[in-house]
Length: 68
Image (tube, rainbow, N blue to C red; front, side):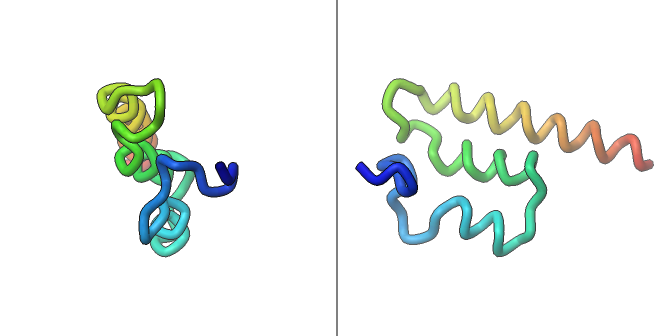
């Protein structure tokens, strides 16, 4: 297996492509990463990855609330 392209990211468009295309910050990039790999990484359930995505999304929301 290629460490740069693990099995759980074997799609036409990879998360890094989307993250760079939309110039996403770290938190939003992780939301994309975890949503797209949900249920595909060996040893992790879809709920594990979706929970991680939610954690990063909530972190981004709290960060943006500080600017209001």
